[in-house]
Length: 377
Image 1 (tube, rainbow, N blue to C red):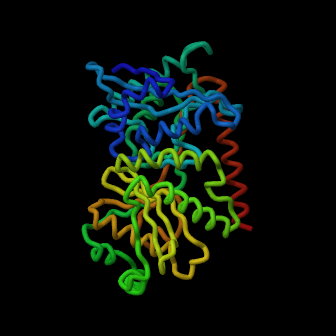
Image 2: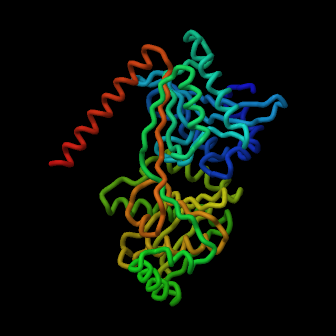
Image 3: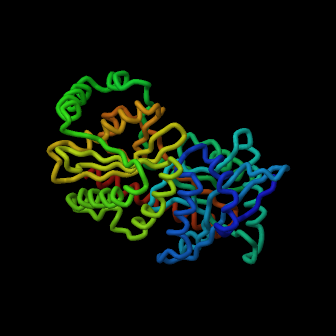
């Protein structure tokens, strides 16, 4: 195995198809999603801290790409030089990982671990001196990341894992009727009543964007309804961030062109009441973002939109419907089950990074104590 670092997108672009094959169909891992993220959140980003692309590619003896660590390097005042995941931060990408072809997971993890340790033994003039490897948005069952952590632990690094916010996923049956039988008796009755009152009567209709020419209109609708909803709750909403707005507008067209994005909107009495921005891949639907018209709340547009989206996914033959991160109660009502996300921190065996890590852990403990004291009061 040979590990080759890449520090610009132009050098990586020829490997885009191979990158996507390694992504196992998960849209958050795709070349389009992550390369677009870097263009909007990379070195030109306005927040302090120097950033460099630091993607590590693993090739086998036949020069075939068999693994990728989709990372960037950032200098931070309290963390030092930190390796982090492309797609992290306010974009909230889930199911991020170290990409490995099937059967090469252990070899890829070992090659990456040895490369990181050798590079980190260099002086500050070395190629990739790092003080922290921070992996977020990782599924709790993710084996490639766990293998990398194990290999680095063997080589003397400190490994710290903690659960963060859950993702929520429904394993879909082949028929809508089979799905509704899994719901609680009370919620099933409500779903059947809404089905008759809204969808069977034609009062509510779910539409899908069927071409790129409708995409700008659909994105405008998403942003408008999303912001209206959050403003009604006294919050800013995601699209208060110009970078996030630009990222979504930039990534949408290529994702839709590749069959990795669908946008649905719900009309009630002919008026847009809700909109869904859903990523597609690996046999599943990922409900990434939505917008709901607050002035139409009496019609339960969020619940109707989820009902229609899940039914549509079943009818299209998808195997799963994922609400992604966030522990909102409605997800359990739809019989989604929680999948913990992990934050993985790996610290090399050097004095300064270890000292920073101890300070970080002390800060986490203090926050936990203060939070528990607040709950007791």
